[in-house]
Image 1 (cartoon, rainbow, N blue to C red):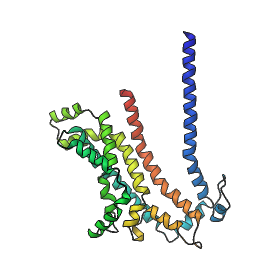
Image 2: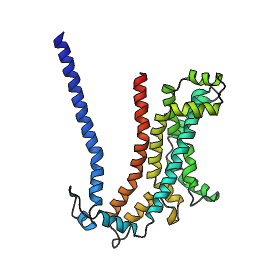
Image 3: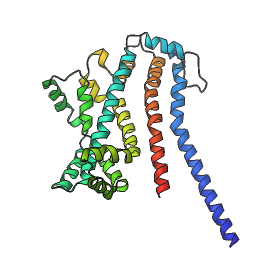
Image 4: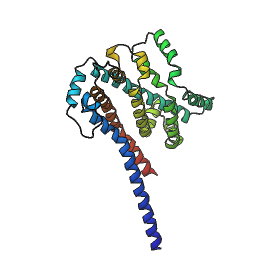
Length: 285
């Protein structure tokens, strides 16, 4: 009996050790690219041309000064990206959660067909409808504005699908029926009961939507034309496309590092809700 317990303990310890090793390797490969980015942002264009070095250099503030005092409106690009990504994330998670709630809580005609139709839309690439989208925005006089980059995020099939799957495992129909019996209206039930319960899933989708909108280059490049309205991905592309007399790879790395920091901040703010939801689920289990 003691030998079996010893073997069991050794087996658990072995699996735990293997798990730690695998997690360590994955963590290393996830973080090494950030380290390379930080190191390269401290080096001059001439140093970068000689190859990679593990030791940081002294040109970080020089690269930053050259970038800020250059021709590109860096801080305008930051503000534009924040506005577009933040509003897109808020609209996406709220209305997608509401749509998923309708599929989860109501039994109506064509329910399965409509959900299947939403899943089918997920298969259509953005590039396929880009030309028609741009022509529609031109006809609506919305070209060179933020509206075409924010409002379409309301219709997010991937987020609807994820939130519906999350509701099936988290949100009990009996809880919704109890709220209705107590006289709670549908919007009050959704805003006061459903949203707080789905906070971990909403936080995950908010991070995904924010990052997707933040990194989006294709659609903003088609819609935005004024320099003071362009987002950071467009400005980074312009910086990389500079002629050989003005090209400075050190500035490119500094701008990429600068553009990553807001995403890290958003993740740190929302990650506590994810961890809290996982911990709560573990306690319930």
